[in-house]
Length: 282
Image 1 (tube, one colour):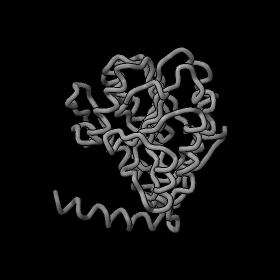
Image 2: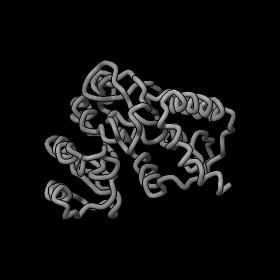
Image 3: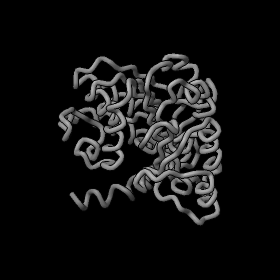
Image 4: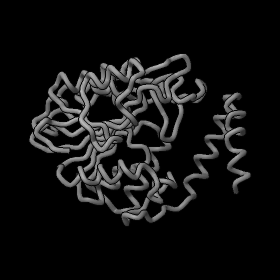
């Protein structure tokens, strides 16, 4: 098995050099994927599509924190839901779920994971969220797909056109008066999504946002630091949110901390952050 795994990387790199071969390879892989059975997770629900998620080894610190935050909200919104890992956690805790996932392969697993557990209090949308309505290209797949060309080394030939809308249009006033947790994992496109979410950012009560924002990791070749890193934080701070770094014991951070990251004198480690109303204790 270890020999097979050691060959997967070089084989994938070779196939990616030939776009048509790569497309055929991914098509066959996707069809074979759906022959795999769901696995019962440590939390009691079933999950297919990602072994580490199903076994409980995926983002253990983040998982525990999100499950804790879910206890005090009415609605869970997942942007970049992938195969539905965090959606399943929310549904298992009795929360209403609204999920957005544009990639067909991920979305099929998302639907399958909802169905196999018998859940119905859920809304699934096969779209990406950004600052506009239309169709955009998304590069790569699995947990690393991004609207940014070259993200995480994804070849330009590994591209899919997906429908795009804004959070303002998709949710409107539906969160008004409800406590919401919004988990966002969209690989570098966070600022664009927030620019289309002004109504949700100003919702009463303010949602709790759990968001992945990388400064240097996964940037396209030639890009030293995420050009939207600072402005993404500014959007939250200008709306009156407080920010916490998940990877440092949920330490409070401010714009000075963000500036130090850009100057390569970082006081921030990791890439997951919580943004919430100042009245909330994290």
